Structure formats: structure tokens, C-alpha cells
Amino acid sequence: MQFLTTTPLAFILFGGILALGPVRGLWLFFFTMPLGAAAALNLSGLGSLALTDFCVIALWLSILWRFTSMSQIFWTLKLGQPGLPLLLLMCVGTISAIFLPRMFSGLTEIFILAKRGDTAASVLIPLQPVGANINQMARLIISASAFVLFATVFRKHAGNQHIIRAVTIASFLHIFLSVADLTSHAIGFPEALSYIRTSAANMLDNQIMLGIKRMSGGFPEPSSYSYYTIGLYAFWLTYWFRSKSSKGGGIMAIVMALLLIRSTSTSAFVCLGTFTALFFSAHFASIARNRHAFLTYLTIGFVTPICIAAFVLAYNFVPALQSLLDHILFDKASSASGVERMSWNTQALKNFYETYGLGTGIGSVRSSSWLTSTLGSMGIIGLGLFLWFIVQCFLTKSAPKDRNTQTTILAIALQNGAAGVFLQSLITKPYPNLEVPFFAMLGIAIGLLGYQARQSVAGAPAPTVYPRAALLSAHPK
Figure 1: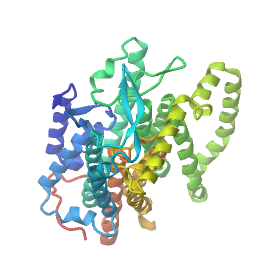
Figure 2: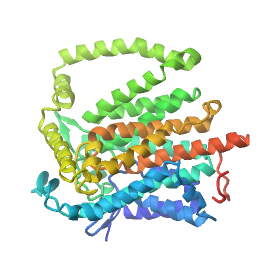
Figure 3: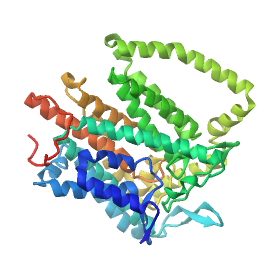
Figure 4: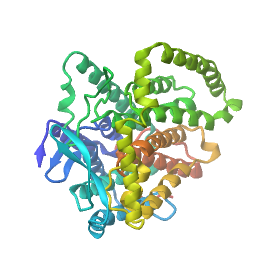
């Protein structure tokens, strides 16, 4: 076990969460999310214990300390709830990590990252048990448990103000670290954020593309940076669109969109455009009954042709911009990076075929898409359980009469935040684990919708303040 520069911060946050509890201490947990490259501890042979994962453990201890009955947790995992396929998925992930690499040892080949001097390169080796099997299994269990945790807590206590505060704090910290990343490089101190980048993962935080510093903020690389940012963008865009009084939400959405563009990540460009197009297409019918939506679409209709014309002119008359866009978008598939990532995906599908649809075990396959990595790692059973969970979460809705309540608006914004993350995972995620932010957003959303349903049946208004002395107890009605 190795202590790091971020270890003291980890224990401070751990103690704060234990003292404040899962709702009032939610902002402490969200504070860790922009620190994606920070580790609480380095564990010999198992890699790093991420700061966010460490705080999930603190949240579980906080909940178990406050609970008078375990029935709340079991209710989240019962048949008909999204927690059931997630529980089965964790079981399948554990079995796959322990047994499948041994069962199919030597029968197929997998990509691993091997050190070559100061760089890392992917090489093919015969399938065998590796440390990543246990590491990825543990991380999947911790990440998925965040869903169970928050779905259980927020089904009992809405805590709307605490959720908004937590997301706002995380957003401002993310912006601060992004600006610090660029500024430190510009003034000649590129390692200024190395004190918070303590994870054992490969740090690709000082990448230069055509003379431009790629933004990575508190994350190890631009791809993981944009993976988190797209979730914040989707959340704030939805919250601003549905909450007519939230001008700050619109400003936050614009800032997050600018951060995605500035990351110069190909996946960020693709997901930003795809999610925005899907979002406004899905809400087009709201024009007829919503003045706020009508003005939004009117503005989009006026601005979009101007932006397209400006883009075409800039692309044709600014050589530097043309080179940058060719490198990021238009020539990406034929680049060395694009060819390598495609070979990862092809090999993952080959692993799926050569293991008779069972997979090689979580942690064995390295891919460039969540779909192929899940198929290659956990097989058709793991993918089916994962999709069952995801579809059930996204199909959970509130009653029509509750669509405009603050609780429901927050739940939908969190669902869309998770949807943005999932969209990007389809083209970037190397492992099946969709990470803590994804499961946390979905867990809070499902908990809020369950709370709203209970309040709607009872006929009582939804409180927005978490009672200081309230304990999580009693089976939901």
C-alpha cells in the first residue's frame, strides 16, 4: 500500500461523508468526480483505488450506520426494479473475472498495454489471468453499487437542493481544473496538476495536437475528460430547457459545450453534435405548448445556418483550422490511432466468437467501444443484463401530472446526463464498467422518480430540504 499526495484529501472527504451522511454530504462525493486522475491509495498488485471509489465506500458505511433496516436495500434489488439486473450483472462479472480467463487460457489472444521505454504500446498475448481481472471486477462492483446506494437513499428523501448544489460544485471545480490545465501549460509549468494526478493509470495529460494543448483537466487524458464533461453538458442542457427559471443552467450548458470542443477529442465532437441533435429532435413537439421552447427553437433556426456558413468559410480559408479538423474528425478513421482502435474492437469480437459467446472475463479485453468490450469480456449474458438494466432505467418515467415538478425535472436531467455518458461510451470505453458518475446519476434519478411516485400517491408535496436528524428507515409504501 502506497500513500500519495491525494491520500490526506481522501481521508478528509471520507470523514466528511461519514459525518454528514449520504444526502447532506452529497456535494463532497460529487467534488471527487472532476478529480478523475486522483487516487486515494495505490494497492500493490491491484493498481490504484480511485478517489471517487474510496468515497463510495464511505457512503456505504454512512448508510449502513444510519439504517434501522436492510429492507430498503433489498427493495431496490427486487424483481421489477433496475437493481435486480444490476445485481445479476455484478454476479456475472465476478464469475467471469475469476473463471473465464482460466477456462479459456491460451485459446484466444488479448491486447494488453506494454511499456516500451517511456511509452506504452498495445501488444497481443495469449489469454491468461491478469491483475486487471480482479481490479476491473472490484471497480465494477463499487461503481454499480453506487446506483443501489443512491436509488435507495433518494427514494426516501428527495433532497433537491442538495443535488443541485452537488452538481454545481462539481461543475465549477471541473471548469477551474480545465482552466488551470491550460494556464499552467501556457506559463511553462505543465506539471502543476501532477499533485492531483496520482493514479497508476498512464497519464496522457500533456498531449499537443498541431501546436495546441489538448485539455484534460483533472483526468489522465482528453478522452476520459470529455467522457465526464458530456454528462455535465447533458444534465445542464436538460435542466435549463425544462426549468424555465434556470438561466444559469443554460450558461453552464454553453460552458460545458465549449470545454468539450476545446478538449479536441474526436469522441467529444461526435457526441456533442449527436446528443444535441437527438435532444432537440425529441423535444420538438414542446414548441406548441411551451413559449420557452418556442424561443429556443426560433434561436436555433436563426443561428444554425449562420454557424454552418461561418464553419465552411473558416475551413476553406484558415489552413490551421482545416488541418486541425482533418486531424480530429475527417481523417481520424485512417490515422494510426484510428486503425489501432479498430483493431482492438475487431479482436474483442474475435474473443467473443472464440469463447463461444461467454467472453474472456472482465479485465481481459481492451477495446475502444463499450459494446465490443462488454461482448468480448462478459459475453452475451453480460451484455444482455447490462442492456436490461440500462433500458429499465431510461424507461422509468414519472406520472404525466408530475412532469413539471422540481423533483421530476432533476430526475430527467440526471437520466439525460447518464444518457450522454452512455452515448460516448459506445465509441470510447475500453472496459465494460461505465464508471461511478454514470451509475450515481442513474441511481439518484431512479430514487427521485420513486420518491415522486410515493408523494403523488400520498398527495403530499415533495420537500427539498433533508432533515438533519432523519434516519433512513421503514419500507417504502
